[in-house]
Amino acid sequence: VCEKYTNSVTYKTYEIVVETLRQLAELILWGDQHDPQFFDIFLEKTVLSYLMQVLRQDVVEVKIQLLQTLSILIQNLKSEMAL
Image (cartoon, rainbow, N blue to C red; front, side, top):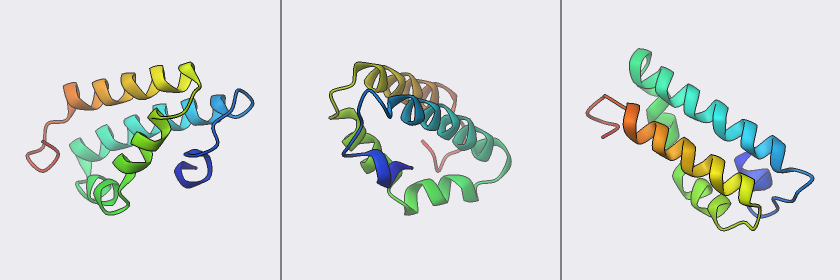
């Protein structure tokens, strides 16, 4: 989903992107607490660069969700590798 929508978020597709961002945060936090390989995949696939591309989109709802997602991750990640 990241690759598909990073450069083409519209008001027709933003709900998919918002839900994907929410689910991504849940998975990364679960992985941080239960399976470090989840965070490794996050790093290997350079998901953060996709997120920065999403932030450049014009749809305000997506920007808000992305900032909330990053805030949740920053506040809740506990493993040394994630920090």
